Amino acid sequence: MLAATRQRFLDDYVKIRHAEGRGSQDAAYYLALPFRDVTGKLQEQWTIRAKSFRYLEKRVLPEIEKGRRGPLRIADLGAGNCWLSYRLALHGHRPIAIDILGDPLDGLAAGRHYQEHASFPRLNAEFDELPLAPASLDLAIYNASIHYSTDYRRTLGEIRRCLRPGGWFVIVDSPVYQRREHGEMMVRERHQQFQKTYGFASDTLRSIEYFDTEMLAELGRDLGIVWKVHRPWYGWQWAMRPWKARWKGKRPPSNFWILAGRFTA
Ligand SMILES: C[S@@+](CC[C@H](N)C(=O)[O-])C[C@H]1O[C@@H](n2cnc3c(N)ncnc32)[C@H](O)[C@@H]1O
Image (cartoon, rainbow, N blue to C red; front, side, top):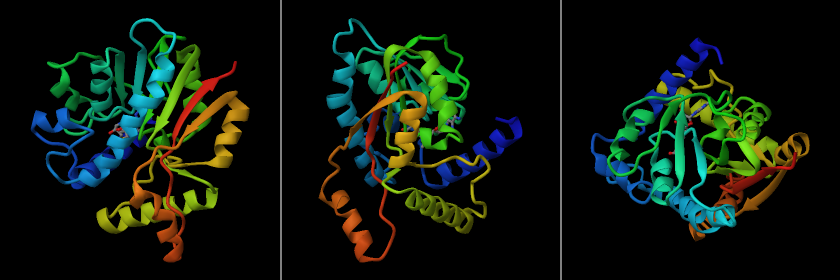
């Protein structure tokens, strides 16, 4: 990625994240994530994120841990403030938090709040060009991050290089649509909303911003990925969203499926 494009993306991204009220000066905020937003500003979002994390912890991780002795070597890709790396370290694993954002409130520098409780390295790097040795990971997790990729083949090709044979990658909290046109509608709506609220569309990077079922099948075929799709239960209100959208004549909302993938070759 060109340095200027990346800087412009980061500047826009940080402006929006700070305006949304993310981050705090208080370590207690970071230590409570994802279960509680002690600032109270984005509790509704964190409630959903906590459900995804609980599912990951209880249903996905045990399957990956099965038959492996000792801690898993895990890349937390697009780690943001590093809350997931912290939680994985508490599980006895060896996470590396990786992000292109160093921001003290919302990026890698916020990971300092965890360092006296659990230690893990923080690396400022692109998930398309990882400074990691081939076959050096058991697991890679993209937590609300892979949809910033501009080319899923390239991003997943890079993680294929870094995973040991039989290793897993897991995609959490990225929007998945049944149909591409609904993903494209969401992207347009989002850019319009940013333009209206902040005066810029936040589209310098041309991120893909979503998955659809056809895309998953194509990626599976082209990269030799076997997908295991998990559909966590987010509660009745969440489950009713498609019906409400239909009733209001709107596009269907995204799903937050957890996508676990393994490369066959
Ligand atoms: C919505 S945040 C999610 C942060 C954190 N994983 C979480 O769950 O709260 C997305 C993160 O992906 C990072 N990101 C976007 N593009 C990236 C890239 N090409 N390489 C590494 N990180 C990237 C952003 O800087 C940001 O911190």
